[in-house]
Image (tube, rainbow, N blue to C red):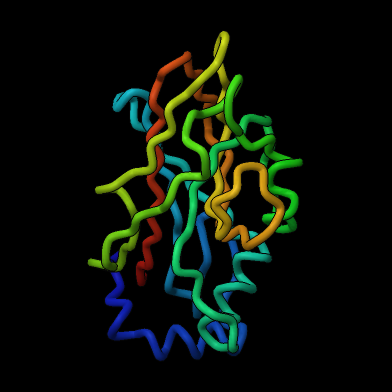
Length: 197
């Protein structure tokens, strides 16, 4: 697939989204039968063993995108990344309100990470059909008496650990569990790419 020049085709993409000419698949969001939007989470432990997992954009996230692009909903200025520990596979019905109860979001001491809030997704400007924070990944400093398992992550509009407000834009269950020890660092990046077949 070739990369899509999003700026060049923005009006077309908006029209396809407005008219419902899109569908969600396991690979991502297909727009107008040929444009594919895929989100991926990149994660490492102590800067090593990078793994990549594709995301699910739940119904709440899709509604938010449509309402911001075509409706009167204000754009969210800052998004936040949050890891979770349950062995939970996201479905289209998961929301910011149910993210913690279903995923068991990591929180603070004695078992979690030392930072006081969810970590900010600091995105770079879109380029070559992609936007993400891969050059400035979110870092979580683990605190645990034994070990902690991380099974997935989400992108949310609220920075409150275990919060139930805001919007859940994206969520993923990792293909393999990450097991971390006390003082380990977990780095998390999220990138969205639009391609055209």
